[in-house]
Image 1: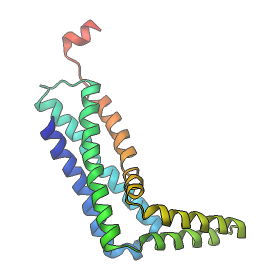
Image 2 (image 1 turned 60 degrees about the vertical axis):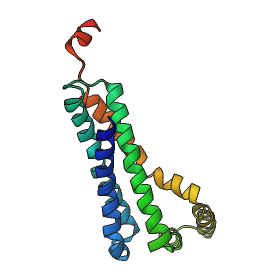
Image 3 (image 1 turned 90 degrees about the vertical axis):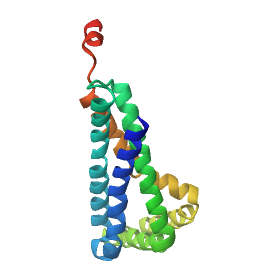
Length: 177
């Protein structure tokens, strides 16, 4: 299981990490809204490797058979490896390549509130939230936790679906149930 998890986890992590790195020169042109769509689309695409990892494990190690539980275990471990790659890449980008990201995002959020016709109180509330976000995001533990929560839920959903779709019980086990 270990080899399958490492290979497919690193491949999945490489897809999401490469896309993050490739889009850095275009961040201003892409913008936050399109960047979010592009980012989550890339995350979903990278987690397609969870399906292929579970299938590879089923076919190579399980002789064509896998339970939901074993499939879930393989898939969630691939998701954890991939998410760790995603987090490591973002931490490098944030602390080394784009340390002004939080300020840029805060300015965007406040401007978006103004453009939407928010009241002065709502704009002030958004400004306070962004000030809190700035402080929290400088803490590496909170930064890592928040970044981990971007890809992980998607990987969890893909894992659940993949484990359910790929499960195959041996004929004797299925007949006994």
